[in-house]
Image: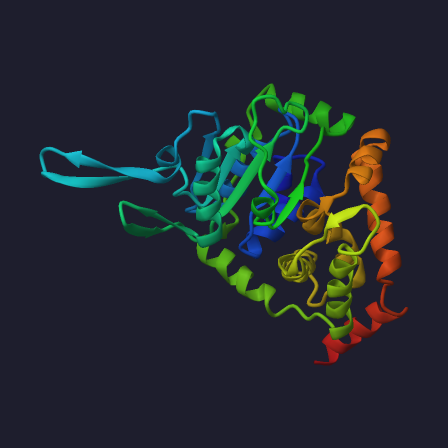
Length: 322
């Protein structure tokens, strides 16, 4: 599936793996990126890679109402009864564009659907499709007229990432390919909905050594005492990081988690769950958030050192002998 999506979204292997990891863990993704970086195409490519999957796009504006997202009951004069008309959230892959432009009550409706995988309308609870993946976007540059997501709601996202602009070679390839036909038109499904569910179940079978699991927890706990932090990541962060490493290993074709997996996923899974002190924010604005995040990662790795050398070889041997 990863290779299939890569035929459409070029040069973004790591970012696609992150989104697919969230899909296999039943989580949702916050994409912080400028317009024109293939976010809509990514959502459509994921849905297009799964036979029978549906996709929808919600463009958030201040006048967007919760019923515009979840759907509503409409009176049918011929049947003399109310008929439910589902909203765009009733799709397997939902792109929520510029979620911070929606009013807080609409954001709450979206986040409730994400957390519960169901919506309640007129007292009736309706289940959402399974699998269910929400890709919510924010424009980090344009903040005027927005309603920033509160920390408690940010914590509901499984991970946060950004696609960014493609490399020069990839951009040339994109322009050349789209002169003829859009790559999405050639995309074919490679998995069924049932096979995606089976892969999701397989995530639980990926082995994680007790030492690595404890290190995951130590790293998340380090975010609570690190310099420049007002509020660190919660236990939800520990749960998400542990699950994400299993999915990441599975997408790599491995049956076990390595410390490298943990290091690769620490920032995408944990960073948005942290409330930073004003001193950290001021420094990040001066040196750039990418550099500030890298320094914060190193600080956490110093506070919670990596498990002993040779662990990866031992893990592989343990799995092979099992």
